[in-house]
Length: 262
Image 1 (cartoon, rainbow, N blue to C red):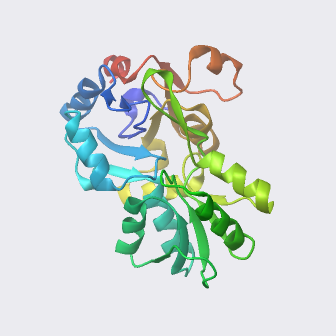
Image 2: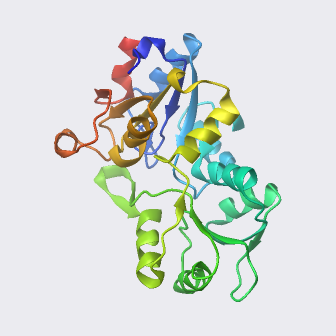
Image 3: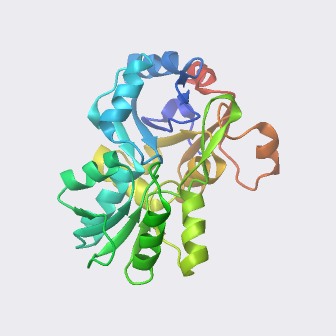
């Protein structure tokens, strides 16, 4: 475990850490301003693959936070990195939003939406446009070709302690129908960290993961051996934490309280 003062780059979850729904978490802007003043690098790192970089930048700017394209990295971006680095797949059947489809097409992939076509693999993203026919087609393909999911989150946190079903729930549906599980790319898997390190140039010991989810954000730090910081502003409360076998290096009510440690 490194001292927070020695961290050179913070990997910041967004949903539940910087904002909830369309509401900025108290102190988040001040925390980011402090990092900038101290010339400490940070990346917004999210498992939510339903949006592309431009959508996240627009949302952050709407909340009063300046961000550039290189500041945002999603599980969708990490999935593209994985496919280009480790496979020769080009034709993909995708469960995903138009934004995720555009991200893949921009990187040279052919995204298929029809049934009964020759494809190289299935990619399951956070598809908020999901239909039964899409799931049906995906199950048919999964029985035949490799299957990749952008992230494992069961629910996506919203304002007022509400949630919406996320990719993990879709993985469970497909497993029930096919018996197969995907290669998972996003937090807490090493593929997400590999993609970040290939893109940012920092060593693992210089990084800290800051997030509100034990089984993704904090587990990533624990499993992969770098500093983890849990904030209690999103999915996890202190009762959940005390019952969990996953132990963060640091715990704060929100990112606001990290400011005094920098």
